[in-house]
Amino acid sequence: MKVGMIFECGPDGADKKVCEHLARMIQPDIEISSVTLDNKPNLLCECGMAAAQLLTDGCDRIIIVWDLHPPWREKKQPPCRKEDRAAIINSLANAGVTSPHVYLVCIEEELEAWLLADGRAISAVLSKPTHPVKVKDKKNLEGIKNPKKQLNKIFQENTGRPYVDRQHAKMIVEKLEDLNKLRRSVTFVRFAEKVAGIKL
Image 1 (tube, rainbow, N blue to C red):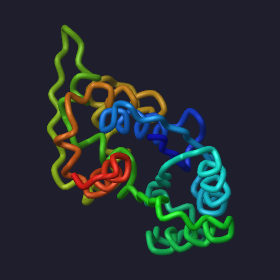
Image 2: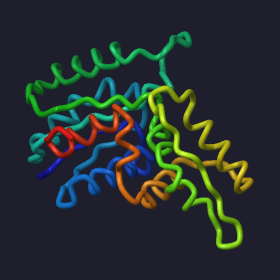
Image 3: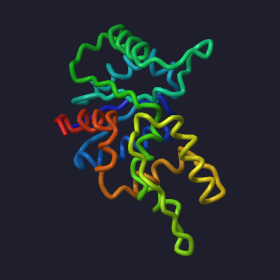
Image 4: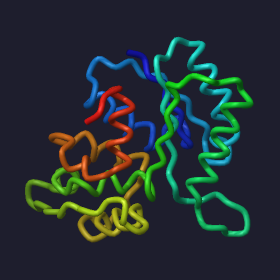
């Protein structure tokens, strides 16, 4: 099965690296074709053309992934999933995309909420033979405020260095033993179901 993914990050972005890795854990024989649109305003405007091209290229399904935060909105307005979704639907319509196999996954608040689900994986990244680290799992993943800041705090406290999403996010998912703890996240379950094409 060939799955197209559209992201708001750059080609080296954490969202792309993490989602592609998780997709391969969910569906080992998956073929992934990703498009990166650099930021949320671009994704909201240009995802339709990207989706049209991915369908032309033979993708069976397309998943558009974006973080609710930061909002990238004028006048410091709070983020709004409904307005983001409306903009994406409009972009798809303008590009003539009518396929029922285009799915939207808005991560609440941002990708790092998924990473905080499994303390074992974070611990494995931070631990050294002489300095084992034990990080607790976060339970209410959709309720985490500023997850990137929380992950940065864990890195600073245990290594003295900041969390760098492009570098560390993939390292964390590569240490996942399974996806059981991520299933606490409603948005991860939605992503996984759209990747697999089945209810989990």
